[in-house]
Image 1 (cartoon, helix red, strand yellow):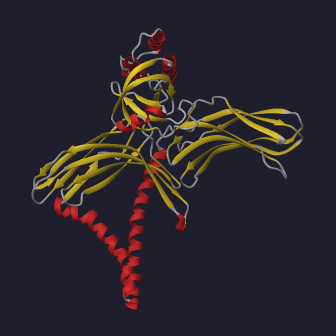
Image 2 (cartoon, rainbow, N blue to C red; image 1 turned 135 degrees about the horizontal axis):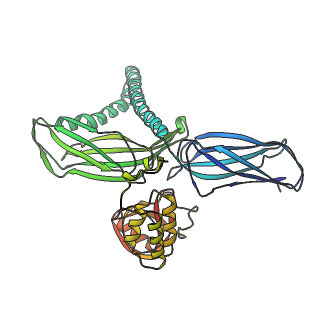
Image 3 (spheres, rainbow, N blue to C red; image 1 turned 60 degrees about the horizontal axis):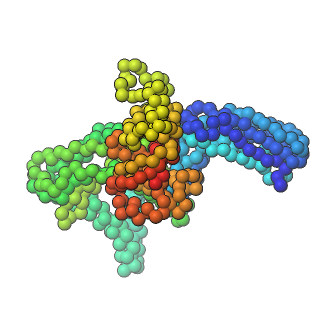
Length: 468
C-alpha cells in the first residue's frame, strides 16, 4: 500500500469551464506512514491522446505544501489555478484533447503519489483558431515546397544513375515521371476542357451555425457538357504518429455535407458561367485546431464532374472560430431579445407541463432551442422532460465520436449516433441498442422514425440525449 493516498476534488466537477478563467478545488492527502514531502505540486494542464504524437501544455502550477506528514493524517489543501485559453476539450476518433488538474507529491527515494481530475474547457476567444489558420496555411505551402524539392532530387539522382547504370537509372526515373503524370492528370487536363476556373469564398473564417458563401466561375473556350458541380463541406481529423521512416498519417472524416450547385448542364463557351456557393456549418461544429501533429481541419471541396475526363477538383480551407454566443458574457440588451424566447417563468411553466405529460416532442424541441444558450434554463427543462417517451423523426448525421465507456447511456454492445430533429433543428444524441444496428446501417444518413426516451442533456455538444 502507498504511504500516501492522493485525491483531487473540483468545486464544480460537471461544469464547463471557460478558457482563460480559474478552476478551484481541494487536494486531499491521507497518509498511512510518515512521509517526507519534498513538495506537493498541483498544475492545470492539457494533453492530446489518440493516434497522433502527444502534444501537451501547462497553464499554471503552484506548490501547496513542503514538509513532513505524520502517519494517520488527513490533510486538505485548497487551490486556484488558471485555465488555458486553448485548445478546447475535444473527444473524437483519432484525436482527443483533455484538460485536467494534476497533483504530485515528490517523495525522496520513493515513487511519487499522483492524482488527476479532468474538466471540460470551452474557448472564449479566437486567438487559438487564428493561430491554427496561420499554421495550416504555412504547412500547406511547406508541403508543396518539400514535394518540389523531392521531385528535383529524384530527377538529378536518376539522371546520374541512368548515365552509369542504364536501365536501372531509368527505373529510378519512373518515380518523378509518375508524379509528373499524376500532376498533369489532376491539374492540367481538366483545364484543357474547362479553360479558366476561378473559385473563392467570401470569407475563409466562420463560426458554428454560420453560412459559408462564395462563387465558382468557369470560362470555357467552347461549349462544354458536364455532369454537375458539387461543393462538399468536410471536417476531418489529421494526426501524425512516429517520426522519420516510421511516420504515419491518420485521417478520419467526421463530417461530410455535399451540396449540388448544378445538375447536368452545358457551360457556354466564351463567357463566364457563375455558380454561387452556400453551405451552412452545423451549430455544434468543432473549432479548427492545429497542434503538434494533431489537427482538426474544415474545408469546402469543389468538384466539376466532366464526362469521360479527369474531374476538376479544388479544396478551399475554412477556419472555424469559437461560437460568439458562447463568448458573450454580457446580458443581451432588451432591443435585441426575440419575443419568442421564453424567460425563466416560461421555462418553469414548460417544465411543469412536461411533468404533467401535456407536452409533445415538437414543443419540447422548440422550448429547448429557444433557451439553448442559457445553460441553467436548458438543464432545468431537460431535467423536467427526462424519463418521458416520444415518437421521434430525425435525420441521422453520423455515429457519435465520443460515445464509449465514459458515456453511461450507451447500451452494452450498442452504439450512439448524432442526429437532428427537423423542425426546429434540434441536435440529438440517439443511443441505439444492438438489435437496432441493422436498421441504422440501412438508413445511413437518411430519415429515421421510432420511439425513444429522453435521458438528459449533453452540455458539451448542446444535444438532447435520447435512449431508444
